[in-house]
Length: 290
Image (cartoon, helix red, strand yellow):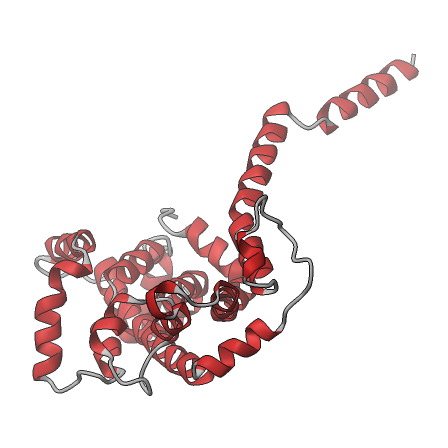
């Protein structure tokens, strides 16, 4: 008699251990998508290590027949890569830190403070996300020229110290923080800035990390504004500087171009690998009302 329940428990355990077919299909689709997304990067790194003529071979080869590290040496010889990288790192880092400060303060005000016109002002702020930079670039350029910031890093940094997307992202995260924590701090005599600094900022680590990754990645790769505002090669950023490798009428070494791009994406790739846990956590928690 006792063997029957044991057999039933074993059968139930085997049924529960089976992976649903839907999960298998979803994982398979995700794996296919991951492979498709990695293929351009694999091709880029492979091209950076091959001879230029081999890049146009038919049928195309995924792996180089002989590794050419001199393509990376050509990048260093043809342009001041280190100087361009330092300029891009300076601009992206300062903008990222500035956005973390300004966006967190504005997000706290929109999420927790009550003042006339708060919701209307927030809607106006969000509506600015629908306006592309190309629409406002002419008045911005005129203003930068009148301020004497043209051909300086400040012309890129100053207009980007505030981000409407960053304010929205952090506001949605601050809304998930229980109001009981804020009420308890007020009972203890804490002011708004103390509540922001002692409660909200420590809890907003995932959201701040997410914003930092987005901001650094965008401004590290930004091409449009540096192309318009910077003309001195000593101030040039890496994305614009890499255009030198194209050569006249696009006759440059395609392998050297891919080598330069491979070096340019390494900082962003390292940043993502280090902070991917915070990125996923920040995206997951943002917008959930707790």
